[in-house]
Length: 70
Image 1: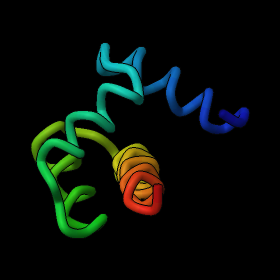
Image 2: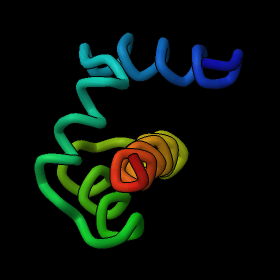
Image 3: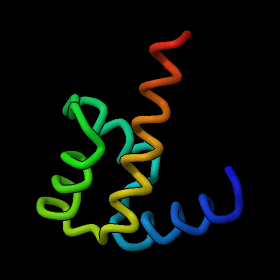
Image 4: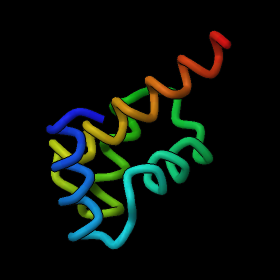
């Protein structure tokens, strides 16, 4: 993790009680077909800001892509 990732992760945990890995696992289970739908869900249903929702979606889709290529 880089410094920005650490700070977003810390803020996320402080505000939600869930770690970044938990958020990623949750949205992966839901099998969204686009980052936009994932961001919309996180903002509307979980009350996250666009910045934080986008960060989670980016990390989740990066992991999904990486796992598919392995």
